[in-house]
Amino acid sequence: MSRTVELDLGLVVAGHGRHYLIETPEGRRLIGHPRGKKSEAVVGDRVRWQPTGAAEGVIEHLEPRRNLLFRQDAWKTKSFAANLDGLLLWFAVDPVFSESQLVRALIAAESAGIPATIVLNKTDLPGAAAQRARLAPYRAMGCELLELQLKPTPEAARAVLRPRLAGRTTLVLGPSGAGKSTLVNALVPDAQAQVGEISQALNSGRHTTTTTQWYWIDREAGTALIDSPGFQEFGLQQLEASQLVACMPDLRAHAGGCKFYNCTHRHEPGCAVIAAVERGELSTSRWRIYGDLLDELARTRW
Image (cartoon, rainbow, N blue to C red):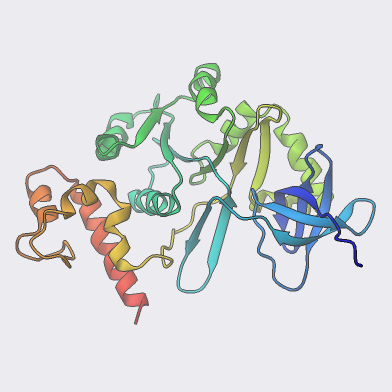
């Protein structure tokens, strides 16, 4: 009679190529390699593994995920992280952010069931009023919007952020120059040490700065921040065109009043969404971006 081997549980805290850094429930870290050619684990995954050496192991399978945030274009899929409690979309007054990227990230989060908070950093700079106005439609449709001045007032910013992050796993996404590195260093005192540890473990040197990484803010409380570098164009090929409105709460609120059940909300008579735009109840820019996304998804389906 064969004996069933009980596999160990681990948390993926970083990855580089086919090498992963796995943390055990006791806090020990080791290198994990996937079984076979496919490498499907992402930061935040819980995996079952078995040891193959003193500080190495093989990943046998993934535990079921609660969610997965990813983007998909016509050529490839990029997974950010799994099993998230929240998403911080981190922007700044300067450099000026792309509203299209914001919309795409919010749609991806909505489709994955991940609550998102928008952060506008550097509100002490000239131009804050203009960027605040651009974000007004998001506040109006129920998005939580935080305004911070992380660099000049780090303590005040930490006081705002810490209660929202406590006991949760949060992914932060944002463009270069918005202050994400300042955020990580403000919340994680030993962030550079953690980067160095992962770099050394994965033997990847400076390349770890181009990979998603898990930081413990408070391990005992279960408070973690995941930083994913870069914020390139956010493909949404995982969605059908018909799913777009369902992932845009402000458009969704009006779509039920359309005359036609299959209304595209672009030109049809009796469209409640278009009527709301004309009355000023819906953001023109949001409706325009919706149209661009609809065209994009339609093109890639042919």
